Every structure is written in structure tokens, then in C-alpha cells.
Image 1 (tube, rainbow, N blue to C red):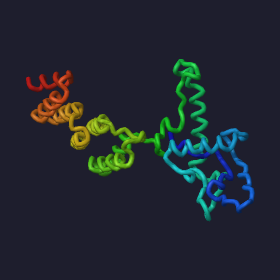
Image 2: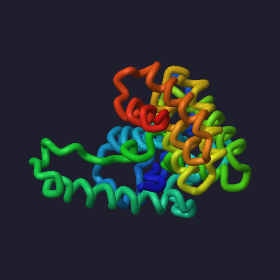
Image 3: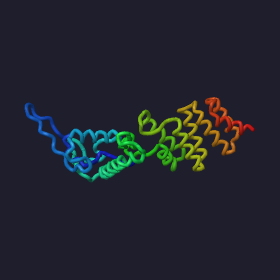
Length: 249
């Protein structure tokens, strides 16, 4: 899902940054009315609208100016403007989410109050473009091979590790390696797997996958060594045990 952003057409929230403190003893003027609300009902209380906007920014990891013309003090602040494509896309995504949530109860066979609703964070998880890490790494490797792919992986890991945006678990680089191997890039696949061992040195699954790729390349001794390590790390890995017995025969 692409940029379920902060749009909805709020006009005149420019006072968020532009309003000046009232002079001593003077009564603060009420904030200007919101206009151009197209998805959120027009009679929604201002605090509720702002809370909704804040939820959008958190879900996408962006600021108000991602969708709104909002340059802050001294700049142009036109929250009602529809000129940014992200704002227009946001409206469409909000309508799509609303439609999905309407259909979900029937699709999953549950009552509406027992059905998990989808929202911005369901897909975005803190990034504007909710692309899977395997796709991002594979795209990077398209022009620079595994070196470029790993550089992108490490860049994302440095920036987002510990958050919900991307999967940095043991299986992530394994999946990326398997995709590379399917594309007849066995050496790239092995590079990803060896890098995975830097993060997960006791990963039996990584060694088992290395064995499969090495065996397909005709490196039977290398495959046996990798399987032996896989079994050593996980004696209950029945699949690795069976493969090891087969190769040794």
C-alpha cells in the first residue's frame, strides 16, 4: 500500500507552527476553522482530526509537509492545498482501507467487533513506501550484485533495527539468498548466507541452506561440511541429518 499519508485536506492548520503567543493580558484568538475536509467528516472536532493526523505521521515515519504545503514560520503554509500528489494518494488509500475494513468481517467469518481492522501502520510500519526488505535488497543487487545488496541491507539495518519497519530476523537474509539462487546467482546467494552468519553464527538453517547451494554447484565436500555444522548446531534438524546421510553415501 502506498502512502496512506497525512492528507484528507485540512486547511488552515498553519497555526500549528505560525501562531504567535498573545500579548500579556490579551485573550488568545481561537484557531481558524478547518476546511477542505473530504474524508474525515466535516464536523469532526479539531482535536480528533489532529490526533488522526498524528497517527498518520507516526505510521509513515514522516512529518506534516510530506502531504501538506507546510513550510513553517516565514514560509508558505497552505494546509488546504491539494497540489501534493501524496495528499491525493492518501485520500484514495483511506477510502480503500475503509472498504477493506467493511469487507473483512465476511472475509474472515467473524463479527465486526472481533475483526482486526487495517490501517496505515498495517502496511507502512514506520516508512513512507512499505516495500519488503527482500525486494529492496534484490533491486539494489540488480545493478551491483550481492555487494550492493548487502550494502543496502546493512544501511537499512543500521537505520531501522529494533523497529517494526523491516524484518531483520534470522530468516530474512536466508529468504533473500534463496531468491538469488532461484535467479541462478548462486555466488550472490552464498554471499548473503555468509553475511547472515555474522549476525546469527549459530543459525543451523543458514548452514543447511549453504549446503544446498554448494551441493547444486558440485561442491560436495563443502556441502557436507555445512550440513555437519547445521546438525552440530541443531541436533534435532531431521532434514539436515537426512541430507547429510544421503551425501555421505
